[in-house]
Image 1: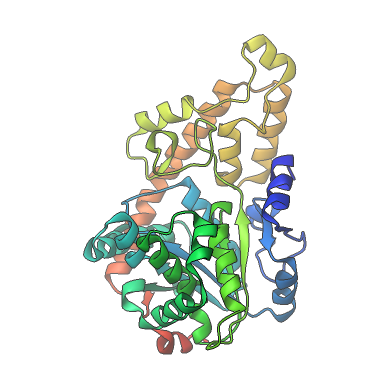
Image 2 (image 1 turned 60 degrees about the horizontal axis):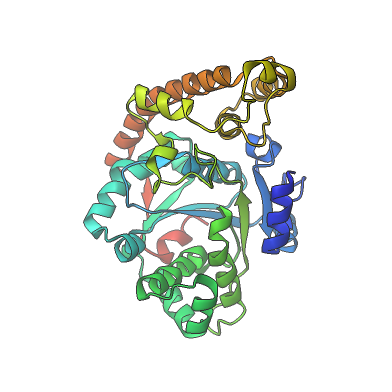
Length: 362
């Protein structure tokens, strides 16, 4: 584990994710083997889940844009890793949150979700036969949890955790708590929420609420933390708010994709002579770090790491490889996306509206 990740674990008060979690995750998934899933809140809860083998895995869709980027791909891959062992896989569409914080009308958010986001999650490998979807605006039951959380969480806590206590932020956080706990209205069981570290405040506040609620008897939710996919300039994580520093899915224009990749921050040496002599710094090289998230061939990744860090491969070569790989990936994805769209249009996915429908899957 890199020093940066050790510091993050210490600063955030997290626990290391155990090496042996095969009871709750696909141990062959590259995100497990490469340490991309690297921390949890908390280790004790992970141990309990491993013993009981009774949990759900959950993530959300923010339907405010027509495309996702590689950072969201990382969350989908994490969901896939847990889906094989989870009793339930739940994907919520945060259309109320998108309305409150992004100003996206509900009908627009629904269109984004049905025409792009849900098909994208399926096209990228989430199993539609074992995934349950719902829209926040359709789900009265989760709203009941949100209003109970509103009774138990103080204004001062919101200010302490988020700084900003705007009404839209408060409403969004309360609904996020409702989302994370909603599956337990059907059956109390542990929940695993794969997230980036920037989402940890939501996990902490939800876990605090669990200790106070006088109405519900919920099991803990567990944050499992994913390394950030770096922005192309190496400054922070990839985000749709910085479109020139992100790789979207899909990137329709190959020339734009090529320019983005070739401008990506390099860990190589300033000159070709130095590059050949001392190799690249993989901890700083954005193209290599992106390959860790997207290249499934472990032997190929190890060979690139060895040759690039030793100087046998130079920066231009790894960027060319990444471009060709992503360009091919985009073409394959478009075919899968069209098939997934047809599946959604034909009613081939499960969309529920409340806890009673969810109970039938347990």
